[in-house]
Length: 547
Image (cartoon, rainbow, N blue to C red):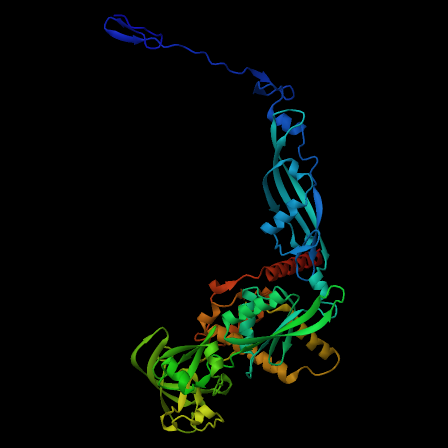
């Protein structure tokens, strides 16, 4: 029986060795020719010119716009997106890149491969882009070419409608009035930093300072509602709204209103001494009604210094039965710690201890000491100074205080450790805080104008506000947990000014003073650039003087 045999599987036996015959298929390759322009060897592909010469002989970016103009609002910094839209586009952001690419005419005829910013001097008011595109060469069909080119935009300034409206009458549509009935403004300094950190003030037209708080003005009602929601999430408040009829268009029956949102913050601050009503104390589980306020967030946190019991009171529960602080941190006095005896376990920085203290004003006058149970067992040591409320001879005109059993009330309630106030602590800080420009600059301009007119500044209010701000800065230094909620920026100091303070560093014993680590500080790019430019100008002046 015979089997068909193919060329591929034909095997021949010769001297016991199997051999296989394999068919050979020739491969066709393009000939190698020389480029007609540069003479470089190239594979023939239907053209007589190499890709490099084709790329140099054609320009697929010829019809693309290479320059343009961008308009920014000089008040709020927003970018004008024609015809009438204004958007927030920070430098070298995706929003700014997209806006630049949309303005380039002819870019849609080619394929965009890559686009990136080219660094320019911030004061040059120029924005440069490097763009890579791909397209077909018209003179050479079926030939794709990649090319890169640069585009330059010039920054122009104008006023957006919202900012332009702020210079006319009836500028605002909605306002938010924030108030707190306390004798200091440390709460508003803290609130200011939270607003800056979360950029909650970006939609405001203007900010005005009031005797008991701040006023925020907005061009739209939804922005005011957004601010009220933000405030309710960070501090305990109650709010109410009202509206005022302004005008009506007789043709369209369209009415114009002004909306006002009144926000009142709970009048209790950190480190205040508080007497809780009986119902509130029972709901929080406190047996001792005389407590300290140890934290303010969207709820009020209380601490019993005799048992370390803590409790939180929500804003709604507070406003059902409102009450005021018995004493504030303005009335604390300084004590000297003589002895500390820990009592029982603690947690965190809190530990019960029996502490023997004496008023610093009594040292060298009498031997009166006070035996106090406090929550500062892990913080205080013999020889330290501590701030506390002296209740022995203090008279309070307070209804809840009169209802307490005076025989069971402690003579002294300690609040926090006291640190010496030195010149280095007040002026030699390596950090700073940003301020809301609208409010802070207007106040500074008003004070400068009063000085130029020969009038006195707001003596009492300005000095009181400066003292409150200094106390807020000291509180940030002493409380690491509070510093995590705000943005601290590194302070850049000129070397000439810095050398003048070196002689005073050795005179002060700052070993026990609280300090802020460099890892907690952010860099203010605007100030860093300003110091850099100032140093460059100083170097140029020195070189010119030497010449």
